[in-house]
Amino acid sequence: KNLEAAKDAASLEKIARFNDDIARFQELRDKMAAQAAELRESLPTMQADIDAAQAKNDEAINRVSKLQEKLDNKLEELKAVEALGDEELAETIKQQIKSLHQEIVTAKARVDFCEMELREAQDRLKRQERQVNDRERDAEKYKAHIDQFTAWRDALLDNLEKAQTAYDDACKAYEEAKAAADKATSPEITQPAETTPPAGSAQPSGTTLPTNSPTSGKDARPSSTKQANAGGKLANTGDTAPSAIALAGIAVTGLGIATAGVRRIKNSR
Image 1 (spheres, rainbow, N blue to C red):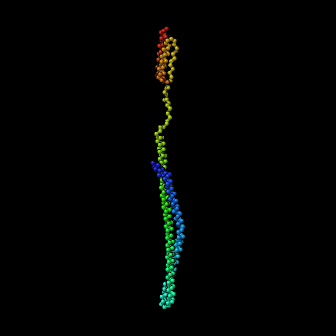
Image 2: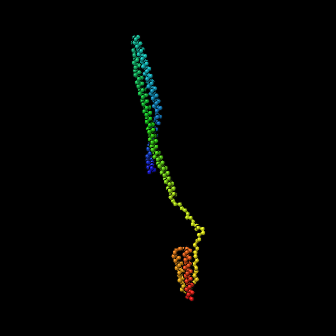
Image 3: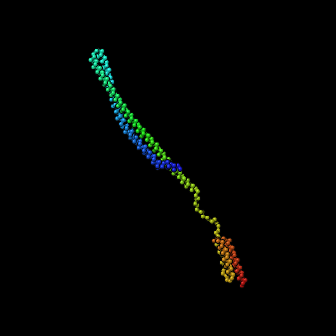
């Protein structure tokens, strides 16, 4: 069950989806990283623009300061001339003061313009830096997604590998246990031992029946018939090796029959 669950969790379709997601996140990460690098390349130029705008602004401010200083001097000079009562010179100084006022207004406007350019350059740099930071954060975010999905995929594959190894080990252990059990329960095949007759025992030997001499007349046939019957009874026992007692009995019977036959012959004579 563990192996089947691991195979289902790490099926080819699911692993393929993980790989597709990882590839998609990798593509987005590469895109964000490329954009961040491109935006970062323009940061030095923007900083140079800020430095130039700052220099212009400083120059405009210095001009205003100089014009203001000149104006202050003319105002002091006008006071001195008016104190002397030189109206013509005083009128000339007044025209100069008026011109200085106009120049100062123009210089201050220049300062305002330079300050505006400086702020715009600074804002452009800040926006560019924010875009760089945003792209880099996006790249890091997609990198985190890549790492997470890769870890999930690798965990499923590792779990599948462990389940497969455990299954293989279990199968191997089962086969070894089964082989050991079969060996323990199977009967051992032994060769039957040869039976040696005990020393000194006598093997039964065949007994030779006495051979009756052929006789003539009627008495010869009954004797042969009785012997045949006796032989038939022995044959009916089914023994292929008759015992010594049975053979002795047959011999005695045959001897009695032969003696009776001789007596009958003598009496008939």
